[in-house]
Image (cartoon, rainbow, N blue to C red; front, side, top):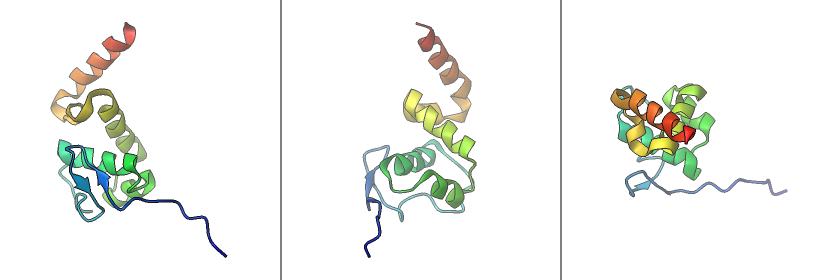
Length: 99
């Protein structure tokens, strides 16, 4: 019997245009999340390399935390992931939604 297997790519394109594989993703024990690492994890999930559940388990994230990263990338690109400018990009997005 053949099981219904989902297609999972071996490589996806990262946020900087580089190829990402499971081996090139940030280490599992990452505690310091810089913009590039967050963007790589989001790109891996969006590209199908990981599921959201796998990413959250692998990096000890909550679904809400990962969803916030994904929303930030969708709204403002990689710059939206910068913690120091979080409020700026949130306000900018809200102003754009009004018009």
